Image 1 (cartoon, rainbow, N blue to C red):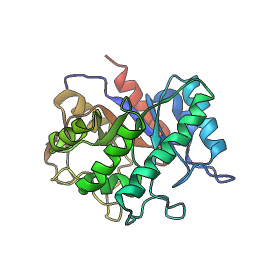
Image 2: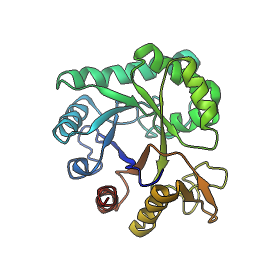
Image 3: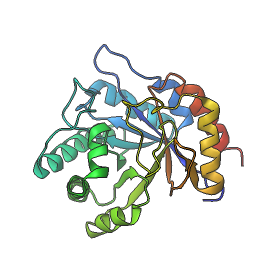
Image 4: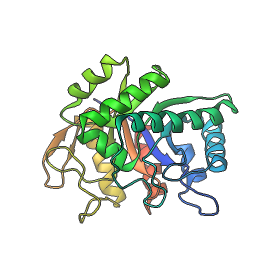
Length: 249
């Protein structure tokens, strides 16, 4: 890794109708990649439009953030969808966002599944394969963002079969278990909120290519991008601190 500039990504465009969520306008200048909700877990056409406009104004790369069709559960509940359903819903949501992007002369550069769909993809190779198929059918030039684990090679070889490139993501504000999986949100300490702790994690990742697990064990991880959640109470100050760190050398 050695002082590589790890791109910052953030889940955004999460407002829905009159319900406002996140600090998108304030956060956008400090990130490199915006994962925009596509309407299935949150987000609506107007919010999507505004988010694209903000991203373009700040030179931020746009990613589709498709989800299971679960507005009430914010896409965090697993659904028993068939392969055909997963392929269709990923293409549908990515296509909707990209159509709005085209009205601003920009396009989606990558796809990052949201919530339960992301978790399903990482623990079930059939779901991962369905998502890779969807990306491949939609546009082979678009990258797929996945959780960086000790098994990156397995995912890469599956993606290669469909001509898809992967982006490996590490979470700045989520605790990790020793096996490299995320600590479930239902468990205490799953979400980190200390700015100091999160910045230290990013420094270690830049310097040694590893992070510390919830038990203090060092975990080696390939990292193309670091995710910070925009709905974290300290999101803005954390993102500003990470931006500063990225632009310090």
